[in-house]
Image 1 (cartoon, rainbow, N blue to C red):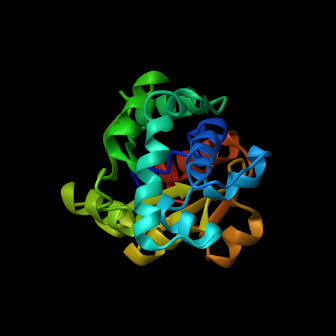
Image 2: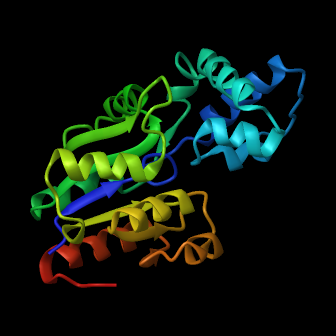
Length: 222
């Protein structure tokens, strides 16, 4: 029975599109790069920010680290709250916990920001632990985040599942030997999740809840 359930944050529990893309645009503007349509920056949602600045705009590692600091000038006071919780998430979390699940957040976002977001939406209470990266960039890879939770709570990989919307979530789960659940209501496509070998894919919050409850009640597998 997989009673330990880990959730990605951005694109899985909340929709952070406005806050993240505005913060990225703020950082790019510092370098003279103008972006008019925020939708062009949606690929930044999910992956570690330093990697995205490197991959999408050709920044060096040093520039990317600096760009993340500039990004936070906007995100920390403002962008963090330009966010919406997906309908049905609070109710799902409550029902999963009532059914005996232990819930965790596993995000590449700095842990301090993740905790602020959960407090803002009043959904911190159901979670046993919120795990994210450090502000200095440590533990930014999803596999490192998942492994930290497994080690901290002495969880066997076969007793856990990781739910997320991007291939980084699936890759991290696979690397740790944890079952993966891909969600399509976030920012990853079915093709992306299937290419990463997601164990199961759901299209809605309701489907996610039903699947996870099934793992709790009858040990259903992929």
